[in-house]
Structures are given as structure tokens and as C-alpha cells.
Amino acid sequence: MKIPESIIEGAEVLAGAPVADEIKREVKEEVARLAREHGVRPCLVVVRVGEDPASAVYVNSKVRTSEELGLHSEHHALPSETTEAELLELIAGLNARDDVDGILVQLPLPHAIDEARVLEAIDPSKDVDGFHPMNVGRLSLGQNVIAPCTPAGIVELLERSQVELSGARACIVGRSHIVGKPLAQLLLQRDATVTICHSRTRDLAGVTREADILVAAIGRAGFIRGEHIKPGATVIDVGINRVTDEAAARELFGDEADKRLETIARRGATIVGDVHPAEARRVAGKLTPVPGGVGLLTVAMLMKNTVAAAKRRRGL
Ligand code: NDP
Image (cartoon, rainbow, N blue to C red; front, side):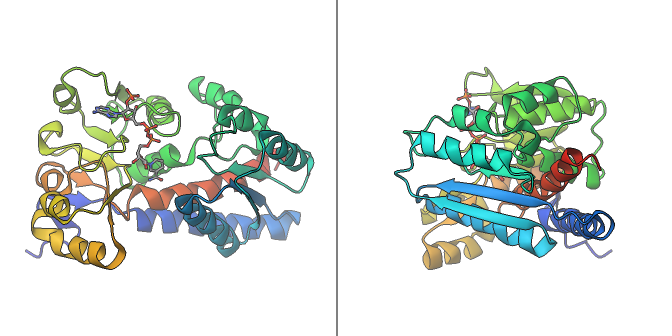
């Protein structure tokens, strides 16, 4: 029997690209329909402050994808000296503009600016990142709100890959406002039994090994090892970590390290998730790759959220 390409050493690869492409195709069709039937073109405004190179890459990809799907997009790149008052004034202006449907302030902001204050200043109906306290509260009440893009993308990936959520034991390692907590709410809404772990969790491996669905959102390369994973579990790797050391790459990727070593030689680093890839491949049933997994869904979900905000704001 021919082994499908998606099966590597037991774990099936849950690639983000086919799901992200499907979501983008649906968004593009919906954008075209809104234009045709209602004369509406959803508009996303992305605001970036300072010179963080990673933020610049993320913002460019968001703007480029909006244009590809037919949304209108506006990009404000502000200097790092921008004051909180200036940023709040810009947001107030965007809140007041009827043509603006979504406002995204790229994080992190420079230290002198209070992130929480800025996020609270965004009109909740235009908060396409889902970080406004009003939307966080509504999400925890189980209401149908615009949910943060990364967790919402993880749920789309699981559902569209036919991973059973109802009744499943899900364990999320990481309790951030951006990933861990909102994901817990979304999985609870879908009747999973959810556990959240963090740096103070005792016997982490004992807890994570109970999970049918294990999500790692920690920010430490290869932290989740084979011993953390229940055999056959679905493992979602949210982490984005730069590994520059060749020995570390060899240890993480085992037989498949060659390509990573080439990337380090060419670009100075390779991107690695929070899950140890060589060990997880042997134990997990399904595993998202890094890169090429969850990250691709985040931008697709931002587009979906912007269209949803446009429709809701306009009563469509
Ligand atoms: P945060 O730094 O906000 O949170 C990390 C979490 O991991 C914390 O809750 C922390 O616990 C927990 N943690 C740290 N060390 C341990 C440990 N030894 N054992 C158990 N838990 C631990 O990270 P984010 O949620 O913002 O991001 C997590 C990762 O996901 C990063 O690599 C980030 O780059 C990536 N990411 C990827 C996205 C994508 O689109 N693919 C989007 C967003 C993030 P405690 O709370 O106790 O400190």
C-alpha cells in the first residue's frame, strides 16, 4: 500500500495552507458578493508603531492579503517616538470614520505606550483582533463575537480537519490573552473538556498526556517533548521561535535536520515551534508543522473577521 505523503513517521501533518486557502477563497467570494449586492467594500486599517522588523513583516502580509481578497486596506506606519496621545487621537479618528470596518493595532507597542489603554480605545465593533475587554467578556459569555485570530484559526483548522471537539479532552499550555485564554473559551463553546497549563503547573507531562488535543502556546523552542504527548493525540503547535544554533537544530529535527541547517546557513536562523518536532512525529496522531501550520491561519482569520465586522456594522 502506498503511504500518503501527509503521513510522516506516524503523525499526519495538519498543514495550515489548504485550510487558510479555503478560508481566503470564501472571504474573497463574500467580498465580491458584498460589492455586487450592496455596493460595500470592507476596509481594514492596520496601525504599526516603531521599527520592530517582525511586526513590519506581519503588517505587510496583512495588507497584501487584504488587497488580494478585494478588501480595501490602509496602513499607518508611525515612528517609534509617537506618543500615546497621538496614537489615541488616530484611533479616535478611525473610530469616527464610517468607511472603516476593522482597526488593528500591531503589537507589541513601544514601552512608553500603554497597550491596554490603546486596545480599549478601539471601537468594539471594529475590533477585528478581538482584544477589546468588551469582546473578551462577550466571548467568555459564549456570545457570538469576533474572536482573536490565532485561536479562531486553530478552531477552524481542527474543525475542517474533522478533529472531534465535543467531549474531547483539550489541554492548552500557555494562558496568554492572545492565544491560551481565548482558545479555551472557543473550545469550551464546542463542548471540549479544557485544561489550561502554565509555568506553575505541577507535573506538566502528567496533565498534558491526558489530552486528546494538545495545544502549545509557550514561546520556547521544542519545549513539548514526546513524554508530554498522549499517543495518537492531535498536537497544535502555535510557537514561533528563531533557532540559530546548528546543534540545537540537529537535536530538534533528527533525520530531517538538513533542510533546517541549510536555512540557518542561508538566513541565520530557522523557525521552530514550541513542540519538539522529531519526538512529536513519533507519538502524535496529527501535528501542525512550523512554519506552515497555525501561522498561516492567523492572517486568513483576520480577513474573515474584517468581513464579519463590516457586515455586522452595516446590518447585513
Ligand atoms: P506569552 O509569552 O504571552 O505566554 C506564554 C505562556 O507560556 C505563559 O502563559 C507562560 O506561563 C507559559 N509558559 C512559559 N514557560 C512555561 C513552562 N516552563 N511550562 C509551562 N508553561 C510555560 O506567549 P503568547 O501566547 O503570546 O505566544 C506563545 C507562542 O506563540 C510564542 O512563540 C509566539 O511567538 C507564538 N504566537 C504565534 C502566533 C501565530 O500566529 N502562529 C500568534 C501569537 C503567538 P505563565 O503565564 O505562568 O508565565
